[in-house]
Image 1 (cartoon, helix red, strand yellow):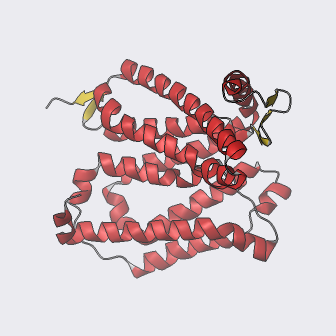
Image 2: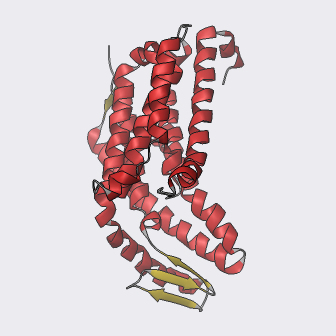
Image 3: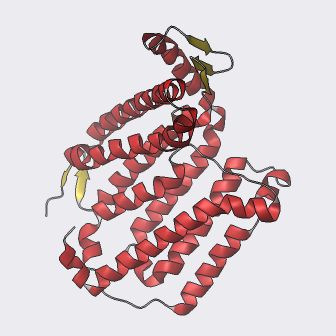
Length: 305
């Protein structure tokens, strides 16, 4: 990044507000479960290793594709009224117990967790940046919001389909793991795999289907945001997208193998707390960064005129 950009007051304000939003996002994300546990007696969350951090990838795609406009943003003052109103709504959503949505209304647990958080963080974004900034990128931000919301709803819909992906992964690992050790036990019925004394359950977070959904989110976001000034070669885009899904699925198998290997031969805690938590995000974001820089530009061309 050109450090001279920080001499521009408008750009500097955007970066400061972005840092404030990210700090508040991480603070709420890390302590929300402790808050609900202390005040309401429940802890509820969905941890697939990357979904909480997907917002950084989305913001990264947005920044990469709209960098020239962001650099030229003019300085503006936040409205104290907007900050207080939008911030108050956001905090109200975050401190409201969502467990009753599951117990009383029968709403899917994934939806009852993600949708309030999505709404709360949307108002938090409004509180930090205010409507004046939103108007500059209104179309792009609406697209991002709708895509993220679609991703959340997809998480709800695919709850019944993860088992097929898990079975495919279990079968693949039953072939690959004997190359590492003879002491491998694979139970295709319970979707449990044991290497030496360490075993894992190939449940929804390990099934790979959420990773493929997240890849779809980022890929579609990129195409939608750059369609204003680039012509998309849709057949090439489809082939590249399908190839990406295959790579994401294979990387998820590699991830599970690494978790098993580390847990069996080095440390259970390291396998669960580090590799299970973050390896999926590293693989996904690393793959899409390569896509964004090297693949996506090749399936599009600058519009003439």
